[in-house]
Image (cartoon, rainbow, N blue to C red; front, side):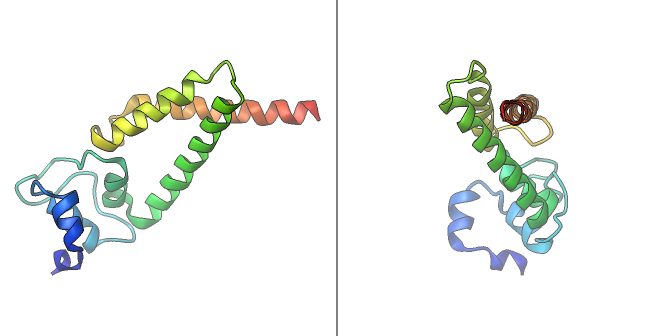
Length: 136
């Protein structure tokens, strides 16, 4: 019943290899999420190999909104660091690489390099704000 709520585009393009369970899990508990892994069916125990879909499954719309907002801030900081030709411009580039890698492979909890570079970007953001505050 809940799978009927998914659009045909989602059924055929996003889940062509039997990963319809992801849509089903999200349709059952859309606000708060259910689990990190697929719980039923042939693909039981497998994660979706996509950060956003995994976030939707695990934390629902509420947690995914927080994740997207946090990622937006990291991308904004990364863009600022690159545009200002900072000596640390390699950090956002590696973050972008591991983010794209995480959209096609790995899970949220296993993509450790994404988290390392995300926290380095948070440090760069705090450092940049501190430098601006000290200059004024």
